[in-house]
Image (tube, rainbow, N blue to C red; front, side, top):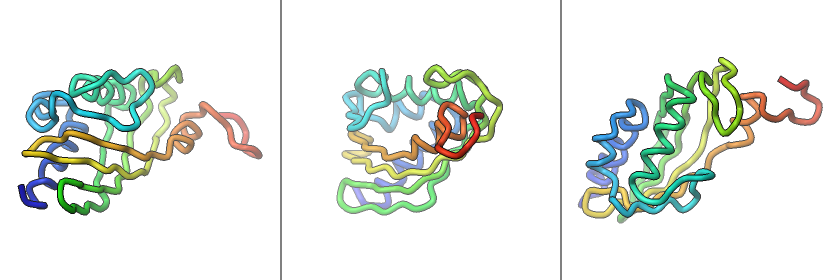
Length: 143
């Protein structure tokens, strides 16, 4: 597949993140998908990935994932992203706060024959937890 086709697979996957339409993931994610750095409790494969995305969407129902930059080489597609959402449901034990959250990060994905087969995400979890009020940084009042 061409680099542009590989990037299109990731763009389609982001559409799943933004809409929660699992049929999209069934099209573009390999059944034996590998998450290099899974979320706590994330099960393996496509079903585990779908479950974690739906869990995030339940906590942030207005989730919007924006790809700020995307680069492809061979089977690898790297993207820098920003996601925003309102914390409306429990997230890893943190009750809903109603706060607006913005998280940045990078993800390196591998696409083979039109399917996402492997991913490694690097996300600013400290910022996410701070914005939700789960932790307070030194010198800041608890939320």
